[in-house]
Image 1 (tube, protein in one colour):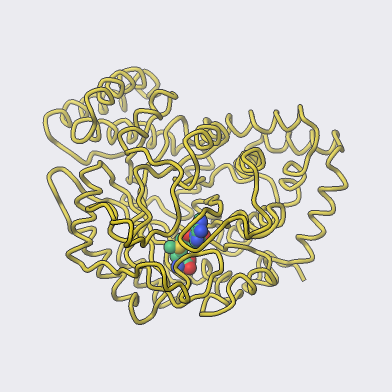
Image 2: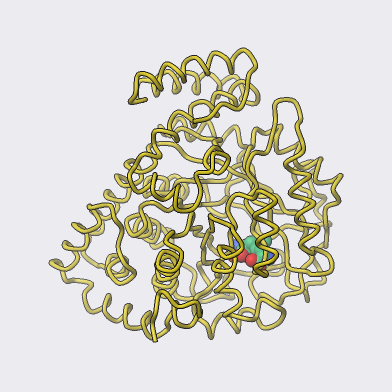
Length: 472
Ligand code: SAM
């Protein structure tokens, strides 16, 4: 029985409800009146339910699909302005006891080089990331209670936050580790993490069990209910995602929106972010062995429909996607991207020798962070290294309230300008710096309040003189 408020995975992600939703959407894919009415509802900026959003996803009326895309772009501008938040993944360990059939970290892979960073190696990685200009990381690890126990993760977070190299600092550590207990989530919350991110991989239970044949991750309910446990453990911000390519994208789309509705119904706050990773080639993984790969067009449509369905949820695209594809989805509501990423364990401080491959997947966008920052600015976006919200206690429902009322922009925009200025002073190439300085001058005119603009101007001068870490 479908029940968004239930704490049981099979009730808040209900297979029959998803099947009904997909049949309903298919039956209405040419129903212009219904589709138009859903678009009108989306324009109210309060979001859509999974059924309405799936109708938009399946819609085969070209002009209406185009309308959804422009609405997605508009919503992104209304809620987030033109800033794009930057981050990088940091792989701590690829030891893993699970048997995920799509991931090269699976326990049976004897080919991949197993590595686990020591605290000293983490220091080197973090210094390399700080020297690129990063302020926000997502730490990643395989699931292995012996090699990667929660104590290791906690110690690593402490190490990361403690490193101050030149003007560098990692100010927000998001965590992408396997589903765990409420007690462990409480420890992560106490360690001061930003978002706890866990990808569902697939919402289809039967496929999930086949794709995760062995190891603790095999347990669908334990995995699907993990975000609930994280929130019970005091983590305010959680991130969802599915790995597109494993199951049919429409099923995943309805599933992820039901998950968002569940979090909203049970905790009064939806997901902080939704990630949209696509399956990539990796050590012993060939994406062609999986039947549900999606084209760039479908990928773009998914992004646009997520944006109109959950306007206040950040949307993350990683370097799994190419420059061209990232450019396309930036227009459709993506608000956060990674840059200069390495998916190997220890790949930032020293390039990995070919015979020692420890990477999780091949990246498509191999540009440096400086190149990505410059490219974003040339496209008219403000690359933002802001981490202010959670440091100012704007998390969970407090963040959502500000976001839903669009007030968050009053912080995001000036914070984006100030953190971009820090980046330009400390890390940018001369060319990027020149483009950035001009952009900041232009964007100052868009700060709505005269008072705030005066403060920003004053702080920008102070940053040029060596001060750091201002925030609203
Ligand atoms: N071990 C943790 C877990 O089980 O959730 C952390 C996840 S892993 C380091 C990060 C994510 O990478 C996975 O959740 C999965 O979606 C994604 N991933 C795994 N194999 C991939 C592949 N071949 N291509 C693209 N993404 C992949």
